[in-house]
Image (cartoon, rainbow, N blue to C red; front, side, top):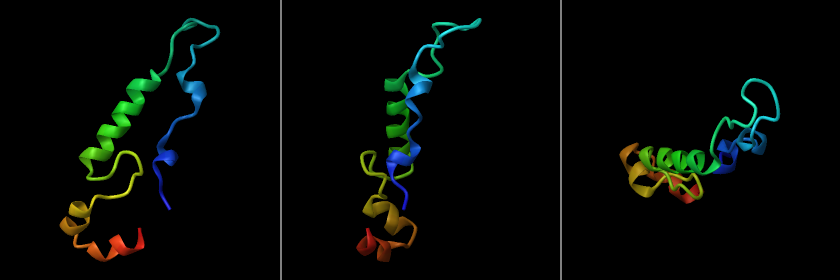
Length: 70
């Protein structure tokens, strides 16, 4: 199944680049990415800690039967 861990990025993307024209810069700030991921899950109606859909979202999608499987 899908979990929030599947949406995490590799740690290397949060480290400063060691050399080249962008040396010292980071692709992403880890805290910013994690907050964006939490907001995404909230927007789509899922728990940001587990990635599981909220009951209200399941009802909205007429998928309340799925709740027993989670």
